[in-house]
Length: 567
Image 1 (cartoon, helix red, strand yellow):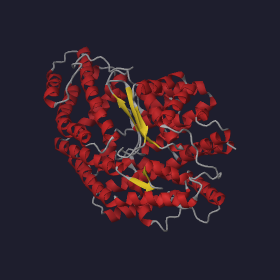
Image 2: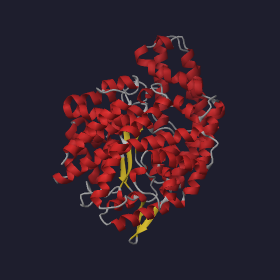
Image 3: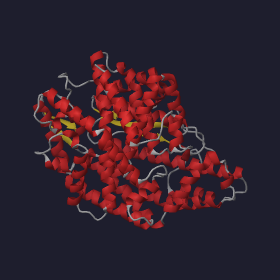
């Protein structure tokens, strides 16, 4: 069993109420600091307090998403968002000011604290007291997306299915069944389109006000600062979109044409993209959530004993909730528990191939959580998404050579690998679409719902529109963006998937050439947490932080060649 780290500053049992917490923030704010050693102790004490609060919030979020129908769990989550966070925010800013003003801050180990100090200065730069209540409102409003989508289900063959469970039938060999499934799922989503548009319009307005208050022209520019994007600019993102359009879209268009011919169709429809073109039933890597966990432990163990041991620890400590059910929020995540040093994996498994990749993806995040657990400060563990997603996406690819634990049949194993590599390429245009859509949204803050729809269609079509015929399903196409949780809950967190996908391909390439060295470099990079720049972390992994057209082409051709090798 695992336990929270022993506390040295705050009591072992700390009730999370502001009247209990406030004395600790006051003490930190008023404590004299007369040496580098005292400053480091101050940082450690502050870190311990922040880790305790992070883990408390984590469990409130986890429990709420596991049961979105529970009013009690929702209220506990909202209590933290409305009663605790707004009180903490001004104190955090004052503590940041105290740290930066200390004459000993510049005497700290420059190599060790460079990233941390840079982040603190940025936080001070964008902090505005008037944004605190707006952030509280945003936090509460964002949760409504989970409630709306978590309640969605459809009836098929006199049975009720969550949308994730129903999506399994999109792989059925019977085209009529696929179409009926897609139409039911789509109709259910469209029932909520106006509600989701209204919610999004409200969130967009709140976010724009945050940016204006902080002295920015728009929320896009604010978020680049808030996310600490020191290594690239909005213009670099546009260039990355262009590289994907030029180098990836043609490969996927060619693959879609092959799919159409193999299936003997005149036109690919939205329900034709998931079925296996071999004419064989959908891949079934496992039957139950428990089996998925067990097989994943074995898969990770076969890559490296340490990896499998981490998932085993999570299983023994009840840190998985993997099966889909009504009332459970959609999607999947790995949530680090800051004090415990372990994560919680949440997903909506329905027994399909996508669930396998979700598990190994979140498993990569989980390993990252364990590897950074003992870093000195809690902030050292807060990796930028370009690094966090490198951990998860690399694991998707490195694990493939051990997927025989899921597939005993060689032909099925080959199908699974080929599907995965095609999905790797398919990720990139969707990333470009979602990212460019958000650039448009927040640089056009006064837009109407109709104007947003028009912008979405132009961007979606530019990157192939999933290479299917939408002519009879215009409304579904117009609202497809609403299924992307990130747009509602984690604005601008998406381009990182594209950058990390390139990095993951490069990590996998190294791993294939030398498994022992490739794994060693991957783990060494993750252990750094966020104590080095993104470029330095990628370099430690043996790869480049590069998303130029030339690099996109090089890695895309490598993936295509690997696909061609699978007969």
